[in-house]
Length: 147
Ligand SMILES: [Zn+2]
Ligand SMILES: [Zn+2]
Image (tube, rainbow, N blue to C red; front, side, top):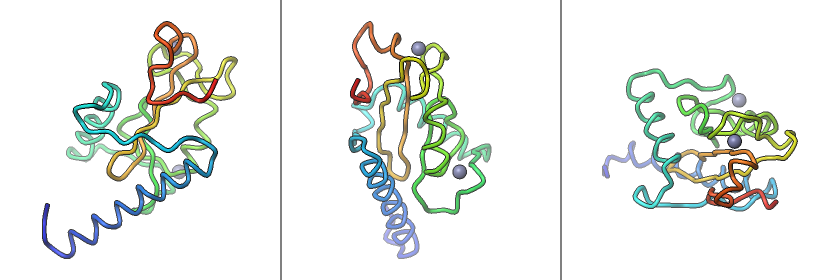
């Protein structure tokens, strides 16, 4: 970690954005995102984060039109090379597809989905799987949506 004051200020802003994202998540009636170490994180998180970091490095990372950094940001497991603002994350929920089978898994789909949310350093990472993919092993996410 750098002692450069400018670097530290950016780190503080990133941390604040992560905390803001967590508050919004709880305010929307959902459980707080899980915090995890890279070694303990589920594979989907490691894969999603790896794609995001690669995209950031090679300049192909995209973002929705509303983002002005730093602010609460989400990364959807099905589009790991794109940062989205909180509004886009919230609006996407209803229409998201299952990360395993690609079928509908959003909250407006027939059965609803099971969402796992993990808080990264700056962004919230979210994966949704459909009910039938969740059922064989039970919801395998860090938490389900309560159903
Ligand atoms: Zn947006
Ligand atoms: Zn599925």
